[in-house]
Amino acid sequence: MTRPFLALSALPFLALAQPKEWPKPDRAAQMSIEEYDPKSSLVVPQHPKTRAKYPIIDVHNHQRPNANEAQMDKLVKDMDGINLQIMVNLSGGYGERLKANVATYTNNPKYKGRFAVFANLTYEELERPDYSDIVAKQLEDDFKAGAQGLKFFKNFGMDLSEKNGKRIKIDDPRFDKAFEMCAKYGKPVLIHTAEPKPFFTPWDKTNERWLELKQFPSRYRPGDKYDSWETLMGELYTRIKRHPKVTFINAHLGWLGADLGQLGKLMDQMPNMMTEIGAVLYEFGRQPRYARKWFTQYQDRVLFGKDTWEPSEYHYYFRVLETDDEYFDYYRKRHAFWKMYGLDLPDKVLKKLYYKNALRIIPGLDASKFPK
Image (cartoon, rainbow, N blue to C red):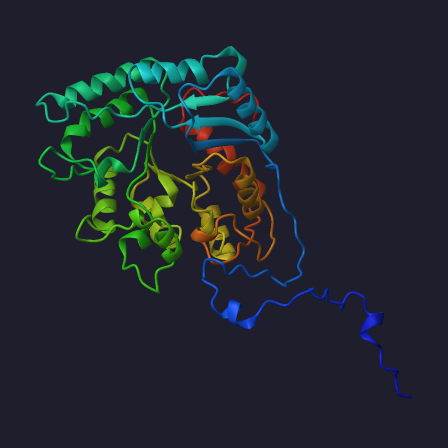
């Protein structure tokens, strides 16, 4: 018996909405890569997340030093909404600025236990012969004033220079006493070195960050103006090896999110080196199987960080880390032309990433609100 032909009108799930006016082919052909924004036709299970499964300690954030009560109330409310229990403000400064940040974020009883503040080094009087003693003393004062760690920004090693223009290296011995002060007081060092490796490679059609460099040309690091990425990272590892009693947090997965195997080898060589995932979700979110194995292997060495404060962007981190979803959008096109995949990390690994590792290495954090 011949089966009757089934008209498309009888299959509503196949019916496509017809546009009132089709775009002209010549306009589509002239469209730039920046305008191209394809919508996936893939239909798969989706489990978007707006709140973390477990409470979080964000070890990589930056907040204003003079926030008023209304701003602080909103900040804490937004943190509560995504289950962010403790935020580490890395922009603590030094001296009076550091004291002001501690007063605003850690000593205010209204927000007790919700924040930690890291100090930053002073580069004033850098060329004085006793600078090593000056900067170490200032850092000691900042620790006594309430700083819970030390943060280095990317200018350290990349742009910081002598008056004659000579670049000051990351392993410059003038800073040795400051690092040893961290060892003395048991304070961790979160250090941001260099930038994504593609910024240091030829800006051509093969560069994965081509769009970002087009939109922000000042981020390009050509060899005639900057030392190589390998040189800068090599200086960092010399520094880390020089201070085995200091716990270092190599920011942004050490810009090795696209080569986790190499990052693992380096961590094996340097047991005092931790890392964190701030601003590199686009890297490990495209390699779910290998990244899951890597995060499991190094579960005691990785911390949660975000870098920029936009609560809705955390949702993408939760989805990548907690679910096994496939092929979903990342929040910033210029970072990634590709889609994200969930790692579906085991609860044991997730707890260490979200809060246990931070509680272990950052002194003075309030552990009372976190599961055992």
